[in-house]
Length: 439
Image 1 (cartoon, rainbow, N blue to C red):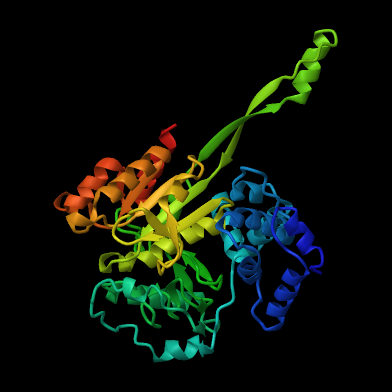
Image 2 (cartoon, rainbow, N blue to C red; image 1 turned 180 degrees about the vertical axis):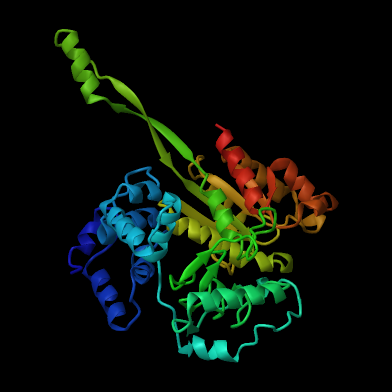
């Protein structure tokens, strides 16, 4: 059934042939592909050899597998909303869940969650009923503080099935646990948290549980709650697993417009006829929306290590959800005459290569800008000035709380050259608003 895939992908300028098809079929045979999301990830590894090909690849994937045609410069959400595939899915989704108040943006996000759902590497399935019976709803929280960052890179390898419990039972127990809970939790099977097998929380593997806050882990929740009592989204807090979706929503406000002139055939004919057959080409100005992003991440120091994973997750979500160009580079403390295309910083890319790119790229530099004064030398300052001059829409996002900024010399030097905002959903929102304001 996939015989026409190479031809379709080649029409988008991608390199695909019968070997691509054989590799995909081999992956299916070995159980690596069970969902559409698996196909997206596995096929991307075969086809996308250059970051610039990710946009065309995403368009080809949606066209071939979902019959969603993303036009040049069109946002993915807009293409989804006008597609027959989404219309049918929406009707079925509304009927199954008996929805009355319909939020189109939320529906599109749910649709995308299903499209990009990947298989969990589940090694063990627990009975939710047995976990429930053994659990103590009156367990006291030791209040050890927020331990999210320590668990960000943990991967799920087990699941709990709560199908044998009624929604009323789950809701009643969750309310009791909420009264005892004093801190946020990651992993485990008891608290309202993230990344575990508890029946309440988000980002975990709990079939037929209750999702509260954040994004789902695998479309398994029976009920979704956005109640502020459970997971309030702090727009002014440094991004983490709880507010990363709010940060993504802020990034979604980025708009880049380019203009070019195109021949207006209809106007040329109409005006030419009025002139008695004298046809002079009539040009019209066409605004085309596109998005190109350069992301530079400081991943070399101890102070930045808690943030690198969630930053990559944020921009990975951005890259998955939108058909545009995103290139990621890394540096340690400051940018000198080169950056690196891999997290280990072994593959260097000269700054001159970066400066040769399209000036319409949006630039996000992410780091705490804190270092010894001698590290911020003439070479580094020169690179920042050149980047700012070439890429007018550049911002620096800083994970260090803003109240400490004035105490760091190097931070303030950089801040004078490049607009700096806190790495929070609100900070990103303000940065994007400023970017869109500049022409």
